Length: 485
Image (cartoon, rainbow, N blue to C red; front, side, top):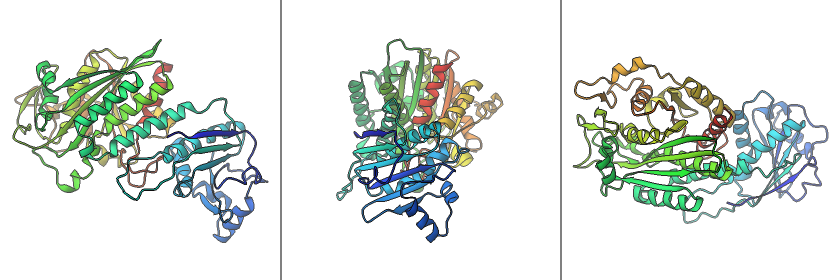
């Protein structure tokens, strides 16, 4: 999607807005004296028995005339980035629902406020104007062509925002693709095409290669599918003068039946999105490449399906992972930690400065947090703190959970080095992290993100779609923090 950005440092007036049909007014808590279309706003506030201060909680949509509509919202000084994004998303919803060709953003306040609100508004507008795949034959949407900003003119073209939107869009587009259109074979082809387009090095470890390597944890999951097209895919972005080396790891289960421990229909619905972690990693990779961040990125994607069949792995199997650890299989629906185990070992063997993995991994994280934010667990307290700060800055909230070793006793096995999980389910998000940590080599700093907020009905924060691309903005912000240390 190519959208033209037009910036105008002058404060918006009714005359300068005369040709605009869809207008967003981003106001401060101090009411503007000569606000364009202020009479229209106060007329509706009077009619609806509202007050100006109410705009800080509920944006108001006003018909300016027979052809133009405006949304008014107040962004208070005490709001965090998530709250600002959520309010802007709500204010933009009625404007973008008309699929406009042009949107005008009018910002007010002091210079610092205008700068911040212009950036946030531009991001929320652009990310929600992104076209997503649709299979409806009568879809007739008009793509956004122009975004005009009034009241602030940056010395740049918001390239970093455009990159974040591109990464978020890629993540959502891949995630919502139906499972028959994103099998491991097709997904691998798409990744190869992305690598060629963006100049990333590309490597694949297919099932025969993984078997030969001894990557039994991953292989156990992939062996149940026909064809056996699972693979660990490795793409690398290597900029000149890279200052850091970070590994991105993503769970890419293209469909999760649960295997022999078959999911009921209610919980199998939507399981084509179990590859969201890999889509987040690819989204970060794309955005970082477009931003030309001075970080070498190794992106490791665990691409597979969890199917049921005569060759599928089953309870009580014992498999040997790439690092030699024997694993007692307890539940075949805990396949995510199996494919990630060997993938994390490969990633850590490259000696990165940090490993960031993303996965829709456990139901217990959803039970712990709901679907409004995601959880992170790390073997490095410093990295965990940086992650929470990055989430706050990006408007994608994360909560840090403990990584204490006394949880390990729950994974003790009588016949293997470690159990895959327990059947009790309590604290499984922490147990999953303790399990995964056994496969990190070279004492690498590692952060695990359990994407409990990858899908929320009605959208989340800046993004209005159910599948929201959570993690791309957070991941980019974390990379920026790692660059600063």
